[in-house]
Figure 1 (spheres, helix red, strand yellow):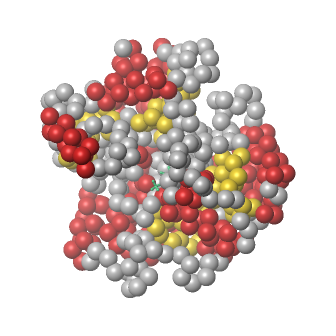
Figure 2 (cartoon, helix red, strand yellow):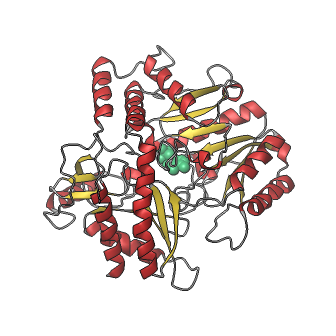
Length: 447
Ligand SMILES: *Cc1c(COP(=O)(O)O)cnc(C)c1O
């Protein structure tokens, strides 16, 4: 059992260490201030306040050291406070913090676009534009696809998640907590069946794709569709990996009808699945690709990248925003990409997958509640069901997650039915911590 120690692991001891009960007294005091100052509408997974983080740990304000199996929702792929990110950000923040790229541009923005154009799938000529959040990137991808095709309809899928703004709420499938009482939603959004191998029975990817394309043809008409927007591996929807052939068949339908195929790789991109982008696992080359989360080591940044003729179809001034491609966020992105390349984090994601699958398969053998293990690379989940049935068991997922939290392991749940435990460790987590974190989760099942 050799341990993989990447150069990015900080001086923080890479250990789980509980010195108080969780939450400790300082976190409890901060939780009280939070309740008095912060809107109750902002959700919370753990009542524990962070003070430092790096490698595979988050250290809280009481001195507890937690194992991080969440990466702040797939963001700190290169780990927290990665030296490459810190160096570049410190230099940039001292030079200048903002000019607005649309007013007086700066090289960092161009360099991030060059990196996106180089790293995303396909060797066609590409252009990129930068934004602040994933939702903003998805909105802009739809704007660009509509401007290019001069069509309005947008196709999305069951279990899809694309953000919390008005248009992206419409694109998102799940009502609670994302949409409840926030309507009316944007029009011209159509939802299609998604390939969900665990729940589809014997149907192949091509079959489910044909249900979707037939529905598109009959209910919308291919010639009216501007964009098909899909996560190549669904994130919030439950780490659903579509059956082989599903994505290529949708891409073929898009090509046949002049529809812009948009891969939302905001959660699955940037080495998370063992490839730069999850579309690559099936050789799918999207026309547009949206990125955010893992792109900039924790700083807010998002991008839309795609075929030059599509990206350039928008009138001058049609894309932008005050902060989009902020220079500090761009510096962080360049540091993150450098770290991913230097440390070969795609290979690291596959090594993490091997460790997770071995441990989770043993868990499944002992616990019939574990209905499915799925995902790719360092994006792996288990779906929990009532034994012997396909009935979702969200209560168990919640209980196991809470028990792991109490033992100092940060875990997240997801899924339309809330019954999926997902694991998104930073790729800089040492092996021993990953194993210990999974052991804690397994012990929670036993208890
Ligand atoms: C998180 C996420 C978004 C939204 O990103 P924000 O930065 O939270 O706006 C969109 N699509 C996918 C697939 C995501 O995982």
